[in-house]
Length: 98
Image (tube, rainbow, N blue to C red):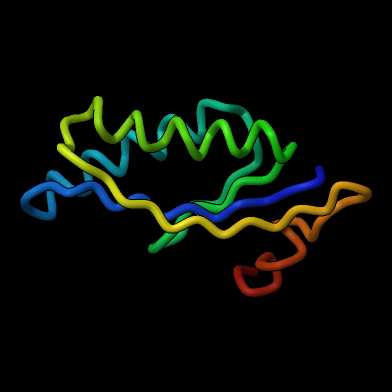
């Protein structure tokens, strides 16, 4: 695993329920990839191969638009280490959730 990303998708929709509905569709897509992910209150972290993660980040925008958002913004953080492994989600947060 040479990369991890954290993505916050912000669809331009009216109302909290609609916002949650669209974001849930994006999260469902991320989970469907089979990659290790961690859903937090502001963003979702995903671990895997850099190129695959970049494709997922791109598709998250398309999912939000297909779900009905007229536009979408996203904040993305990327850790990439072409030669070797990056810190895992488990190493970063498990001790805080035991």
